[in-house]
Image 1 (tube, rainbow, N blue to C red):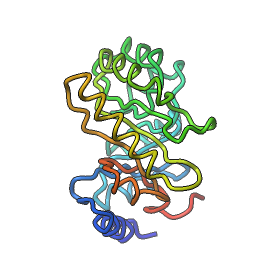
Image 2 (cartoon, helix red, strand yellow; image 1 turned 90 degrees about the vertical axis):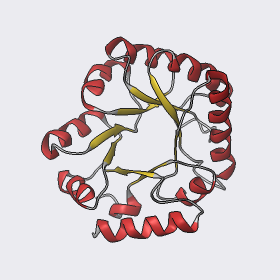
Image 3 (cartoon, one colour; image 1 turned 135 degrees about the vertical axis):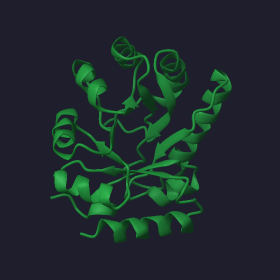
Image 4 (spheres, helix red, strand yellow; image 1 turned 45 degrees about the vertical axis):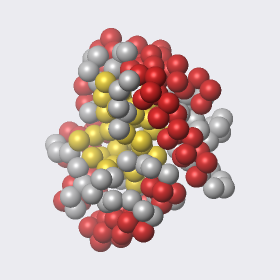
Length: 212
């Protein structure tokens, strides 16, 4: 695998989708890959690594000792302390209860509220109808940076991504503060996410090929 070449191709696709590659942050999703892949991502110029599982991520951090790490998978409250100690951002706050548990450890924790705009029961994230209340509560507990979502498993993801952007805009008005991060778009749908206003993409296969 040549991560640098794959990254260049991703940046070109971002441009064709109407985005500025220099303005959109790429989180390299290293779930299932070993530390050598993490190092190759960093060598290619990527700065943020995303892990779905807390303990898998912590083990890689100890091996790689570089990069900034985001938790992009569901977080259970019994893993809050170790997560706060190791990750720079938690992208998957999906309840006021979880936000409060994180705040008890570190009120300065950077966080995104995950919203289930796909409305699929197998996906985590707060229900869009309750999202503004959870966003408001989380903003009072943590360093809220924005919102995160996964696109639907099938069909056009554009309506879901546009809904997340609308929720972010409504939350900014309610809170009177900027929420600059819209983390939406993965390897299979990131062009649609860019066109809908994504500022952060979570890419694994597009950078590294299929997981082993």
